[in-house]
Image (cartoon, rainbow, N blue to C red; front, side):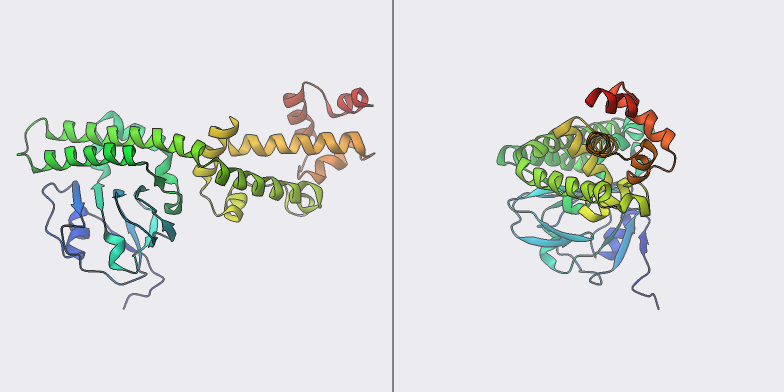
Length: 304
């Protein structure tokens, strides 16, 4: 008997649809499912699963909060969520979670096309599902039209152009999603500013309370765990709002903390380096000079 802690790997789209009690896909490497039109057999609730293929979920009119993946997501008036192969999620707890559309496609379907090499550039496949994409009414209409194009192509008799057309439609959907995520970083600025405030507080704790001496400098992975965000989402959000990725943002905060210590304390450069989490003072001095065009001692003398 399989223990609940074990991950159930679904290797093919055919296997997934079979387990959901749905008809076999028209193409073994791609399927578009309209969950509003087809009754679904709910699998074991809370089961840990991993797909060997991509999934794009589109809920155009779903209202309320649903358990999707490892966390809850408030879809409000609808949205998009993305899963990449190998990402571990949990089966939903209610039938409402299966509302809307789901596009599944295997990496082999796009492998011989440029998209096969470029798909990792679409960072939202590395976001947690709780960081899904909210859509405006106009955006939903555009996404719905793309899903309709994909559906029509899948219902058409397969010919030598079918795969090329479908891959181009997937790429179109991903490019629009990229644009909408960038818009979301800006329009949800209040929420994102709260995240930046929380990040600043974490860094303050590291640099000003002796935390870094005990544990070393702040690690991106640990910070993301504290913020409950994926590394890719935090980095993309910061880059959109500040022009810096997460590592650059941390280094900037580190330099500002160093300037404060150099200008207000008598600590040596080595002591400051250790307080900021550097194992070797030379590494600190090199970073400081790269960012300020001055050595720490030159900055201290100039400030004084």
